[in-house]
Image (tube, rainbow over all chains, first blue to last red):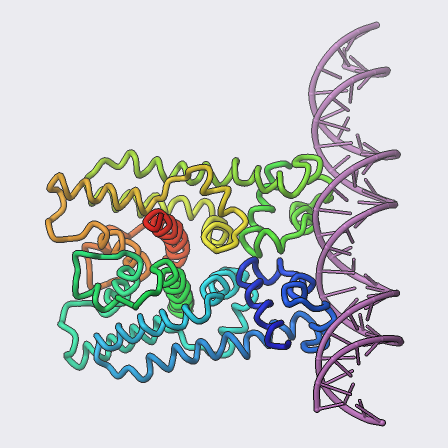
Amino acid sequence: MRARLLDAAIEQFAHVGIGATSLRSIAGAAGVTPAMLHYYFGDKARLTQALIDERLLPVLATLRGWLESAGDDPLALVEGFARGVGEVVASHPWLPPLWVREVLSEGGALRDVVFQQSVPSLPQMLAQRFAKAQANGRLQAGLDPRLLVVSLIGLTLFPVASAPVWKRLFAVDDIPADVMLKHTLALLGHGMVRAEAEEAS
Amino acid sequence: MRARLLDAAIEQFAHVGIGATSLRSIAGAAGVTPAMLHYYFGDKARLTQALIDERLLPVLATLRGWLESAGDDPLALVEGFARGVGEVVASHPWLPPLWVREVLSEGGALRDVVFQQSVPSLPQMLAQRFAKAQANGRLQAGLDPRLLVVSLIGLTLFPVASAPVWKRLFAVDDIPADVMLKHTLALLGHGMVRAEAEEAS
DNA sequence: TGTATATAATTAAACAATGAATTAATTTAT
DNA sequence: ATAAATTAATTCATTGTTTAATTATATACA
């Protein structure tokens, strides 16, 4: 039941936002009484924290693991990232909307929490690894590593029939492009906002 | 006062979401009593509708106007788009977060309303115009117009010191890069989601 | 010009509905 | 029979909404 409550909660949090979600509707979606939420989590804040600890952070750790185990071959890196994002999004459909609403957005309720727990910025990691690959000569000189990241995103958005190489890299099985889109946008946004903030300080 | 209420409302709607914003906090931010909202708008739904009609749609029309008057010279098109987005975002800082939260996001409260009113997808318009420019021979063959759109976004996100031409195109005066980012993400997301939906049908 | 009067703008107060949070009682499982 | 799980019922704060009363603003008239 605890798990079902977490399921219902994260689904609604992602769909309409944390602030706009009532404990009643969460309990209702799980088919139980609102008192169950108090029984298992205490209050809304601790429910949210449980969601972060038990659902959000593990997923981010998974994505990070993909990057860390990808070596520094740029093509493997890109493919691993695309595939990893695709699989994660396919199995956790709540991630993109939740990320956009509550982490990426200004005033998002999870923004500080997620950032404080030193979740690494995935796009930043990607960019660093591309830079490293370039330093190792595995990336043709003159191609800015950052442009690679950009292309990664762009080619996730557009089905580019005229670029077969890229298309092969981004043929992430049967995951719809718009799902890929939303998640990639969210990830990108996350990293960019942080990068800007760090640059300013 | 009506205008000040709209200001306060759109600011909070953008910042914490429509569902999570109370009429009391809107009135409080405007320094008046909640009854003023009833006096001017009736209820929350009509307040939201007024916000759409009087604030959101005019801004979108402005952006569309820039595109329509840009001709089909690709460089002018890109520059005009970047400048237009920059100016709009600078004068309407609530647009990016509101767009991400309530239009782009699944379950966003403004999603259906905005789409129903046949707001044109800016990225789609951009892509079409690039295609036209390419057909007219003004764009070097082999460069997919869609990639241009992607690069436009990418170069808005990353300060690409190694690509002076692009950098010149995107030197949008003193508009911070992260502001450009958020809005571009939002615009992009809007267009992409619609494009995918139309492709599927 | 000054004053009365009507209209607009604003507040104060209150209502019903919903929300979060808690407690005690009841069921279910072990 | 003991503990865990679940519900019913309750409390208190907040929200959306409305009404009546009050203040300001404009308009008309002497």
